[in-house]
Each structure stands twice: as structure tokens, then as C-alpha cells.
Image (tube, rainbow, N blue to C red; front, side, top):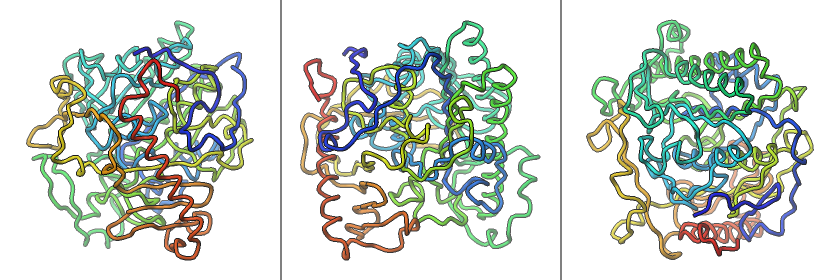
Length: 511
């Protein structure tokens, strides 16, 4: 496998079913490409910011970013759960293409990441925080170093206060303090070293917050002592910090801790922004924040959106999304053009003047959106929760030696009785008709077609401009639209499964 198989073009290669759609070309390579900081909250839903109207949450830094940069009101995680979305950020591809079907399903080592692309452009590259697309230990073909990062302080999954993290694949170390502040401080040290060396930088900071189980500092908890009494009467499931097992607690107590984590994460982002300013780096640093999926049941209070984490409705995939870049976004702006985490790689590659990986991509270049020149998305967005249960009883060889997929960094929440996370991926020799199931979506303009979004729901069609709550199903009244979108979704699924066979990695493959 040769990771340097790149092709020119701003949009790159999208599935064949999209080939006839119009594209928007990116600008030529900038004389001074931007520094890049990618920030991502863990389980941070769309409604959980002050700027999106939350009644109680205090997120002053994200609110300031939304008021000064590009606020993306329809920004989407590539999947309604974490590992697949993270893979889409790294690769610009839908996670089914490389077998990251669900949490704790890994990527594949042949994938080309944004760190590979920007390192080729002379960037220093670092990862800090949650990884969750493979193990972070030394020798893993999927640790951040193997996937293009020069250095990392990372965890196989999520973490709470006083996290245990691995530095550059070494033995896990315990770090005292609030976890968002810890990973931001590490990112700042990396940024300062890159600046001293005269190199642009890519810093990927993936917070462990606000994933449950929740822990907050006393001052942050005190901000939420007066949450409404009605939350005290509702019990929700979550993990016990003491036993690592699932328990039930009053929603009011849980929200107090969750909101404290979000506020601490917000403060850490402010520390990073302030440092960029003090170091004279903020003007030409692109700072991009988003969540990785919607709000989970344990953190859901009120929301104008339907669904929650794990679902294909807006509450499962629409997340906060904001970009700050003073040199290129000098005045605040908001957009309702749909954007998704798989757009990150094509966008950053274009901004750095680099060709795209020579394989099918699902994201597009958002540089025209950043510049205010994109008023509608030129290609649909596809979502798919591959039906992992359908693999049961079928013989699929593991993609990697299971020993390489065994995690090392501990966390509170137990899985299969152990306080770490192991990963898996499978070999998939040929497209199988049994594998088109699972909740899936095509979003084209204002139309959103959802198939099997909930039990017995069948095919549903929504107009998101008129009905962001997805309360009015138009499938019966607009059957031609629904049928055409369903046809295009099926074609895309076939293309994704073809990628899953590994054909994209062949030297003689022509997408």
C-alpha cells in the first residue's frame, strides 16, 4: 500500500452515483496555508450550547466563536456514534468503506488520513485526547503515529478527571487534573514547538467530555445547583464512577455533572484561543469545533430535534459546528448549508494546496462555504448505521491480529468485564445482498430520506427547512421524490460496500 497515491482536484473522487453532480472548485494553494486546530466534544449534541438557545448551559467561549466566525447551523456528525464519526474526520470517507461500523470497530491501516495529507505539506501533526479508531499503544498499525501524527497523548476511548493517557504509544500515565484542560495544555506545548520550528501545525484535540460517566469540578458543578425540580423526578441510566457498571440516577443530578463537564471543556477551548492570540498565531489559525454525535439519553433534557445519540434523526447526527479563522472569516456569518465531518479532509487539503487521496471520498471541499460563495451543497450527504447483527453466524476473518487490537488505557466504564477497550475489523471479500440493512439516510438539499430510522418506520421523507423536528412524513405525498432518493441511496450503499472489500487499496484500482 502506498499512502502517497494522490490526485489533483478540490472535490476529489466521490462515488460514481455522484459523478454527474456539479462541483465547486477550491482556490489555488495559498501563499501562507493556515495552521489548523480540530476540536471535538464527545457526545456533545446540537442543542447543548448557549448560542443554540440552551436554557441553562454556560458555554461562553463557543458562543463567542459562533458570534465571530462561521456558525454552521446544519453541521452533521458522519454517524450517530463516536468511532465511525472520528474515522470520517480523519479520512473524508464514510466509515462503512473501511469497516468502522460502530464504537470499538477500528479503522484499517491502509486508510489515508488528514494527518498524512498535511504532513506531506510540511505540517507538524499532533493528536491529543480520545482516539477510538484503534489502539494507541506502540506497535499498533492504527495508533496515531501510524496514521500520520508526529506525536500524541491519547486514549483508546474516553476519560474523566485525572485521566490515564499514553504518550507516543508508551505505558499509560495518570495525569492529575481536569481532562479538557490537560489535553489542551498538551496541544499548546505542541503548537509552541511547531511555531518555534517555523512549521504550520495540525493539532487534533478530541475531548473525553461530556461522555458519561460524568465528573465535574466543584466550581463548575455549583453553576448548575439550581436546575429545575422536574428533572429530579426522572431516572436515567448511566455508568457508576465507583463500579463501572450501569445504574440509574435522577436526571437533575446527572445533568448538573454533564453540564459542568461541558463548561470545563468550553473553558479549555478559551485557554487555547487566548494562547493563540498571545502567541500571534490566531489570525491565520483555522479553529474548527464540532461534536461527534447527538446527545445520549443520560444527558437529554429538552431539544427541538427528534431523536438522540444512536438514531438517524436530527437529534442523533446534527451537532454543534463552528469555524473561526480571522484571516479568512473577518466578519461573523451563519449558514444553513449542510456540512458533515467527512468534509474536513477535502477542505483542509484544498486550503493547504494538497491533492486528495486517490480513492472514493464522501466529503466535499468547504472552502467556498468558508468564503461565503457556497449557497447550496453540490452533493448529497449519506449516513448509514451498518447492521452489525447481520454478520452473526458468518465467517469473516479478522482484518488484524487481535493482539494488535487489544487496548491498554483504562477507563471507568466496564465492557465485557474489563476496564479497557478492544477493537475489531473484518475482511469482507465481496458485496453481499444481506448487508444493505440498517438505519440509513440520504440528505439532498432540504430533503432528508430516512429508512428504518426507528422500529417499523419504513421509508420517511422530511423537508428540513420547513420541519427540522421531522414531525411530518412526506413519503406518501411526494412518492416520486422518495423513490428517486431511495434509488440513489441504494447505489451509494453498493459503492460503500465495494470499498469495504478492500478494492480501494489496490494499486490498479481506478475509482
